[in-house]
Length: 321
Image (cartoon, rainbow, N blue to C red; front, side, top):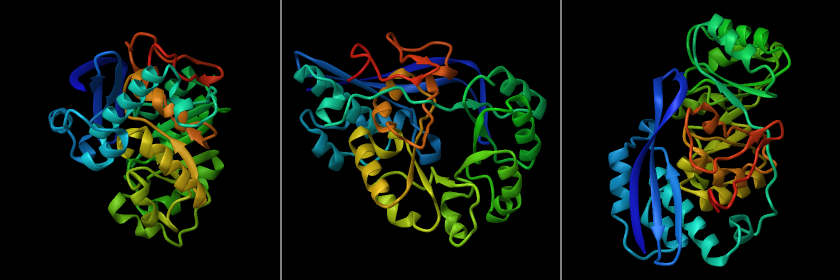
């Protein structure tokens, strides 16, 4: 099996800012696996928060042997971006070999559209109110917070989009005391979910804390091995394929988390439709779907995912799976 890795850059529709910084483009790695007759592909977004770079992830992929399966891949690479791109490329390759869709191979029912969040970039309250008003027709908005001035921003977004459901992502920027202080205001403003309010290494403070707004583990949850450490701290987990190391582990994490009573959120890094396509399978029936990466881009893959009032649709075979 031949493995090819390329770097692709997609321009963003506008500057995208979170508490960790700003960007104007999405830099991704694209993996193509060829067996001589068929080709499968997948995409990953290396994330510096997890000590990943384009160079380090590409090196991991290029270090793989010529022959492996999805099962043996789990032992060859750790959970993370490199394994994600390769695992998803294998699913695509297997689907093409079998002449079936990936969800059929996974034993899943045909996926349907899922309403997805749309993320508002971190900005001044006035600018965020304008962003919210421009996107007030969307049923679910996500706000990046984690700064000393979070409440004016949140108030501005609610004013701009009075009817939208809102979730907030603190990106590890709060403390337990800040969450407790803000909770009444979050409830008043109709916030449905808070992602990762505390740093992953300091989330023990969530144990025993009253959580009137459900708390979702993002940086604290990568794969099934994360689940034991989440007990008593979180109500929901955010499954991202770049964290789980691909669709294979993502499906298993979803099963394991649901069995333990966690709600499911399915999220993404800022990537193209190719990165989102496998995640649409995991997102079926999720409490929250956050697969808006392509909506933030000025350019996308050929045969991109369809987004409309019904949500994000599953991929066409020409894209993936």
